[in-house]
Length: 301
Image 1 (spheres, rainbow, N blue to C red):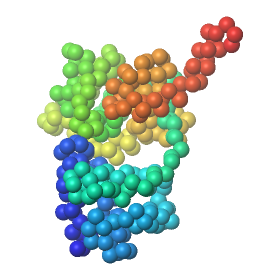
Image 2: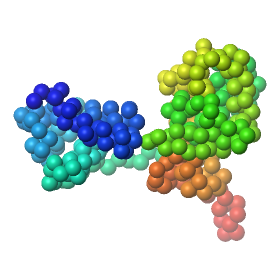
Image 3: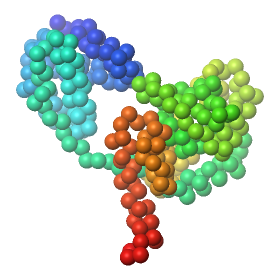
Image 4: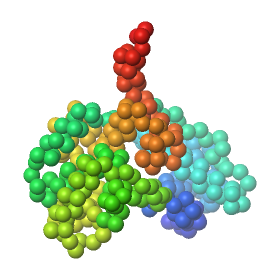
């Protein structure tokens, strides 16, 4: 069996991820890449021809080689997760009686707290944008920044946003998130005004551009690199953070909500997290706020 032949072996698992788990094409590709790389190593190093021939020692050897070549602990953890999922699938299908991954431990990762922009920095930036030019690029930048900060949308969700997902009458926005899960987000009056202003420019300059709500100044659909560069450009100088990406605005949205006393479960729903554990990281960023409240309110502080 050649390395390329493994594709047909993996296909039922990849189909399971795509159609049952409803993972994105990008995520499925990451799983496929990890599996191809791992089994290429097993074949070359040990002459393994089938997944059921893989032993824990082979997997440890592959991971050790990856570490020696500079793979980060986070990448190693992802590869272990891929193989755990794959062999769990094979066991459930009855192809194997036990997984060789049972004794493989994932490396512990240090928790990285989300970086966020200070509230006053965001407000100052939005004021500056409000007073700026009315050309297509400036309107798009303002709309992007307000959308990210006011809704906590992911980059992929914003790029895929269609005009029919915006409901001005109900002041809501439908978002198609991870796993094609739909959620409804509230629109503030400020955000509605921003969206309507952009929609007017879109109608006048790119009416026949298709269903995508947000377009480049040339009327083309947005793509990730374009949005990232535009957001980075406008955040440069507006914040002291080294990291200036769309995801920082999502972190800022969640952190500022928590600082203002928002319910953790509500923030979870707004962000589209599948578990509360993913949202709880934002509670760490509010300790300073809690200390300030305690200092001002408690009689013995």
